[in-house]
Length: 335
Ligand code: TRP
Ligand code: SF4
Image (cartoon, rainbow, N blue to C red):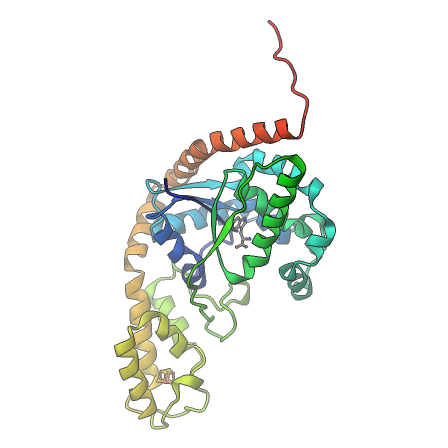
């Protein structure tokens, strides 16, 4: 039997190339090898956006359209929404009872984000408990493998500790989920910072070809290369060259590097070629997205079907957990 993979993504609306190389590319591969459960972590989105919920529903929808258009296939994986499974919230309550606050407070990702996010107050119970909710997401449907990026490893380690504590207190029940660290290419935004919607530096999967060209033209290059006749240095080329590395095969990349060093071509040409490659790589996606947009019912159908498949497993887990916690069962009422 194929192992069960569980992973979630917070709904941030339309996805960008950073999401593709960081997460989606791996998910699309995994669905052929494992039993995959992929869900929209819309409750997790609230940890940082509780004060700005206007777009939560539409962001969820846009993200699922992107999932389908990029190749997640409802015949190969289950897709659902966290908020459709109240059992996750129930398990979260039980797990929060046994998780020491000190474990949560020493989580490096938590400390980092507290420092980084200064524009709003995220010192909430919900944000502190983010990893507990994430653990409930994973173990409720009995996930065994969790594809995540490096930044998520502390969360997963915490989850394993919570599982050990649960098993110690109530008897062996949950398996400790394992991370699958997939090869992740870190993609930079056009300004050289991490690609992020909030930095306004992202190329979206759904950008049209003209927009992609415009954005690639704004990408930072080797700052020392002012004129086309100045030799360039790809190592100093901040964004264009590293992005080419994600799109251009090694032999062609080597030729390109030579042309740059010998000033045999200019940055404009180099960028044009990069834009061509990005646009070409998204041709299928664009077509598929346009088709899905014409049939908006598809998203609901896919999420409903995923939920339908996953819910029985989750209900069984909750029933067994309630038993382990010795929660009183009401006798069935008589007519
Ligand atoms: N924390 C993950 C992220 O920010 C999203 C997430 C929520 C998740 N629950 C999960 C990932 C469970 C894997 C498994 O990307
Ligand atoms: Fe960068 Fe290409 Fe210009 Fe060289 S030619 S500096 S690799 S954009």
